[in-house]
Length: 608
Figure 1 (tube, rainbow, N blue to C red):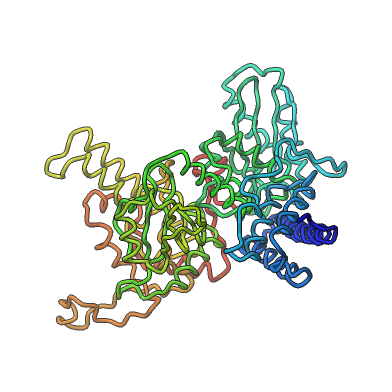
Figure 2: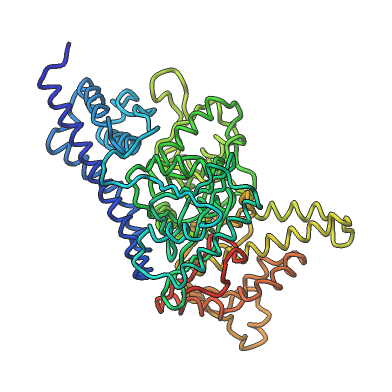
């Protein structure tokens, strides 16, 4: 039976309504991102943090809004499947000349899967793969700006061009000394070129949107000379006098990877063509998956879509099996991985030991807190999925038994699609970048160095250096979390991981609290010999009470670890450190946490 003209009209109207819903979403997303510039100029740091949190919710709000409209006006859930096939075709037609087609396709998927019942849902009705290319999308509106600007300096006028480049961003706040800052950037750029001859194509390309996050904004671009490209970013901060200053020059892929880390909050960037920004950034960071770049730009749903496509591609081109993840098993989360895939999958268990007074909803609320909070490079971002299907033959039997034992409500094994292929369906899962657990990293160093009584010469020296670096990073991670108003709760080494850049990142969120909600106390002085000799806690302890001096016995059993910790981070065992930060946060102070090493700064003095 062929579709009627009336059917086609309904299908077009539904497709148009879905496109209207997406366009409204992206218009609001861009508007909020553009407001970050004013908040930066006026030093509205709390407003910036609040906007970053609220913007995360925009997507789901618009999907619900659009779904309700389609049900109210078109009874979309009752439309036959041939209408839905036409809806998709009309929608593809509306994507022609669209500037965010990949985002609009993902929005279509979100709305469609929300409306259609699972038993009717088929891949024919969604965008399993892109229907419209994002290559060479050009902004053809005369009044609009291009995605990046190019400057063509010479040896004689490089500083002058850098001054013009910074002024072109039209920041409505004066620089303390723009010529000085440009001279510093010039010196750093020439040092990167290493006296190389400037070629005919020598140029600076910078993305036209500034990248705002917390108390800073960043100029992001590349320096091109001959066949060589140098990625760079210029952090711009407020100084103590409230004027602008270029704080550092970050160069190369590693510096940019730290800036765009999965453990940091999302940027706010005003973008007409996000795919052009992703393409530009990927050329600077080829090792960073595109899905993580979309995440960093605040387009988390698109990041999830690309991640899942990459995951399915990897499954098709690999043959190893999912297994229980190495390391100490958690009391709240069941963790598994695929050895060839650089991520871990975390499932909330159905029940917990008595010392874990929590619930599934409480745990999910902690993960949502981390998603919405400033992660300051110290908390891993997570991708949250529901009803994820895996091939049963790729699961280790021991892993299946583990899920059946600890999280049976989260497991279904069936031929869901009726095609004879048995699937493992996990009802709810978090996915994170895989890191080396810090306890395993330290144990490897202990094993390499030998025992205290029988050290292995040079290997022992190297092991102690590795231990000290890890312990210093661990303490720095905790201090960065404190600056972001986060108390990790469970500070054991196993709850932290080492990234490929040697950074320590926290990833166990079920016990985190705001620093401002905690009550930091000293252990009371025993009143008598019986209390002093007691093996039990004899004093009252409230639900949010924290006793920093008690951290030591749990963390510092190894002598090398203890020496490094007491040398660099003994203040973490003192009440005054924690209480002092709590009081400053309550007073409205927003701490500076730099996404680059302090030795890269032009002026190591604290900013404003």
